[in-house]
Image 1 (cartoon, rainbow, N blue to C red):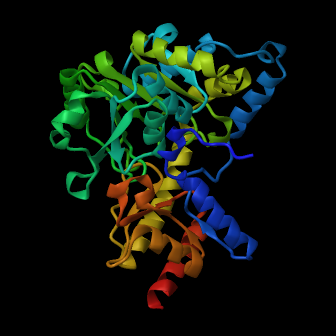
Image 2: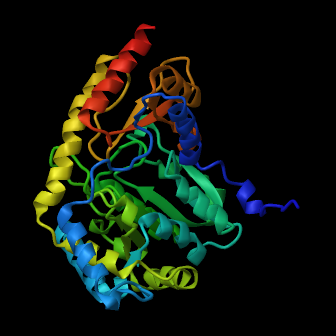
Image 3: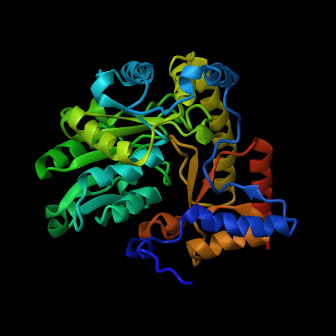
Amino acid sequence: MKFELAARLSKLPPYLFIEIDKKKKAALAAGVDLVDLGVGDPDRPTPAPLLAALSRAAANPAYHQYPLGAGLPEFRKAAADWVEHRFGVKVEPATQVLALIGTKEGIGHLPLAFVNPGDRVLCPDPGYPVYHAGTVFSGGVPVRMPLLSQNDFLPDFGKIPAAQLKRARLMWLNYPNNPTAATAPLSFFAEAVRFCRKHGLILAHDMAYSEIYYDGARPPSIFEAPGAKDVAIEFHSLSKTYNMTGWRVGFAVARPELIAALAAVKGNLDSGVVSAIQAMAIEAFRAPAEMTDSIRRLYQARRDLFVPGLQALGFDVRLPKASFYVWVKVPKGKKSAAFCTELLEKAGIVATPGNGFGAAGEGYFRMTLTAPEERLKLALDRLAKLKRR
């Protein structure tokens, strides 16, 4: 018996990381020693104090039932305190903070709360694929905002077609950026807030990489821009900050109306974040600064090894100021997907083709710093051999 897929699925490209994983598994099955710099998943374990907090919480019978609602009051209070300490922005825990099963879930659900069929959603290109997917699932139409090198990978709001803008409901931004590793100054956020206020848009800012930054240059929150509380919602993740990708926990911050709408969607589609994991997150929010400082130092050491090594081999790549991504131009005359296939088949290196993040990503490939230094050195050695061949 054959079943016909819903039309919305036909509008989605194959999920990028699943396709990469298929090729990777085939190479591994053939006995290839792969240096995997494809998916941005921290290679270090969750810090022991956080695991201890999880263990204690898991033994508490009060946490064995449905974790319904917007999150434990203690979680929302700890998240609000963290936002105030980190960004100097005060938010009300009970009405302006919402627990998420990882920010990917919240990002995917947000359009369901605000986007009607045919509405436009402004999405960065290249960008995290879920902005596009969430828009399609809501019946909306993605409008891509190119992120170009000559604009420091910031969108040019003046280039958005007026006809599309007239029908837009939502704009996505993401800084520090995946995949380009770009950062945005506060002046850009102020411009974005003014633009969204003028055109009646919700400004959704994905800040999953807020704590992965280098040389002491801490990225600002959208809420540090004047007027942002009127139009913005910001998504924060514990995944990269605390090596907690597998535990699936994050949170959103916004004015009460935006939080209530997203919470209404979630209340109909999921049962909330596991309470014991929320308890682990509370421990993370209150952890000494050394916990995140040590993770940052690890990535900075890798960056300072790997990126100059790529540059010495002749690759056109900027030194990232934040995130654990490296956004590299493919060699002249080559295409993104073909070159990444070449890396996999001829050098045993997994990288992500830039066009998988959007049409404007063509001509680039993304590599991650989520591998030990010895593996990064091995990747550089293999790239050098590939270049000589």
